[in-house]
Length: 83
Image (cartoon, rainbow, N blue to C red; front, side, top):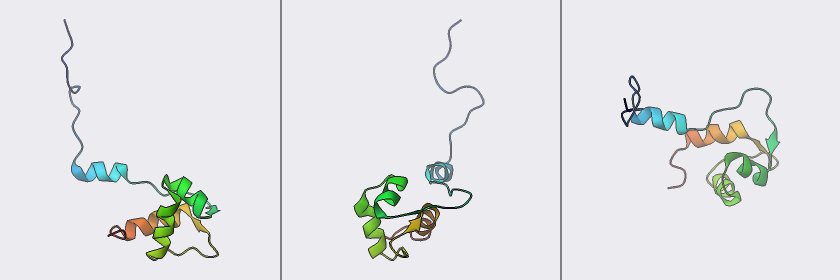
């Protein structure tokens, strides 16, 4: 007997909302380390210029430092900041 190609029985595809939810980066629990622009960009998986543009658009970095969670929260609240 040969196996049928395709999805396993009982599986389902994710809805559009679920795909966006699982693609979204998650907040990190516990105490947060503060990063400068270069290190924050590395943590976000983006270019350094991306974080610089975030700052110009209103992202606050006290003394040039911000936490990963601060950046994720800001990006979530300002989804259309790059337009």
